[in-house]
Length: 174
Image (tube, rainbow, N blue to C red; front, side, top):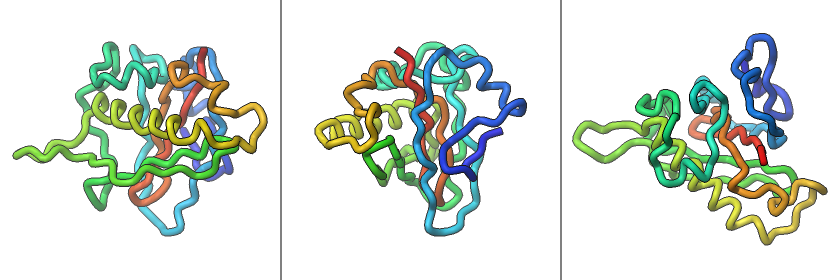
C-alpha cells in the first residue's frame, strides 16, 4: 500500500511486498505535491522489470524496454481528459511541472499510452527537468543533480497527486 497523505512519498509495509524486491538504492525524497482542488485519486502505476521494481530511465528513452512487465497494458491516467501534468519536487529545486503530456494517441481507435510508451514519455520529461535545472542552485545540500547522474535513476512508480497531475517516485541506484 502506498501513501500520499504524508509529507514525503513513502511505502508502507507489510502491505507493500513489492518494495521488498527492490534493487539496492535510495528513493529521492520528494515532497508530495498538494493539489489545490479535490480529485478522484487513481491507483499508483508501478513499473517493474521481470518483477523487480523500477526501470532505468535511460533505458526507457528509446521507447522499447526489454523485460518491462505489462508493457502493452494501458493504465488509467485521467478521468477528465487526454492530457496530464508531470510534477517533480526534487529536494532543493522547488516544484517543477511539465503540463500537456498527451496520454492518448490520435489514431482511429483512440488508443491510450501503453506502459512502455508512458515510461518513455516520463523518462523524456525527467531528462528535460535535468537539462533545465542542472544550472540552478540547489538549496538542499547533498541533493545537487550533478551528484545523481540521469543514467543511474530508476522510475519506480507514478503517483496520482491531482486531477490531471502525476508525480514520479524515483530511485537512485549507481
